[in-house]
Length: 171
Length: 121
Image (cartoon, rainbow over all chains, first blue to last red; front, side):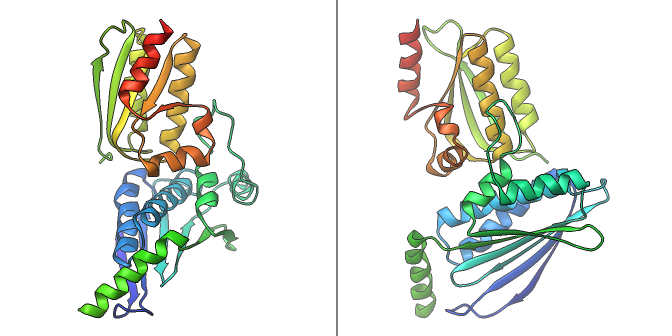
């Protein structure tokens, strides 16, 4: 799993952190990745609730990319996350699954509806949609699928961000 | 390299077909199969009155939730139940988002969950 900080700037009101991670299409890589992204959110001053929600969003999108957007074990999924003062921009790109996979993805993102209670799967993107401010899908010319998520800070997260800025101004 | 999940299983006093399962760690796609195997084995052995203690369950994703609903359904089909106690706020939020709070039997603590089993008898 390759992780590269794309850019960063000194902490402060305009600080931001951007990371891009490319991982093999293997579920085993997801737990450390999701915890890594949640940890960045924590360091950036977002609340525990925001960090947990971020962890879930990353988990569900990458799981979906691996299970439904990867051709074989040599495929990979790229996760990019950028944190700004009041929001997170996340994108998860896979190499593209079947046409049916894409239709299911679009349905789940744009018309989310939990499956019946006897189904073990099919709830992940409903959760992502509910926890995010905005979700959209881009499909590349060669079939790669990219899911973009914007998650803005919830009202109860304002205090955590303020405390972070006060802490940094004391340093 | 599965995410750490540990299930500690013990008998429930005065509940012949009961078991207490303490979930510890994160329940996700990397360990859902082993969890499914362990709990399904209990249900097949006739332990259909189950209380799941989530005090130390830090995290659950949609895959984990899927098998919790499966346990509940399977236990009910065998005239039993799968009750959950001590759910943390983050996990509860995920349960609530997909509407599973109306499908799962959720209690504030283990004692209440066990008491509800005893009134069934």
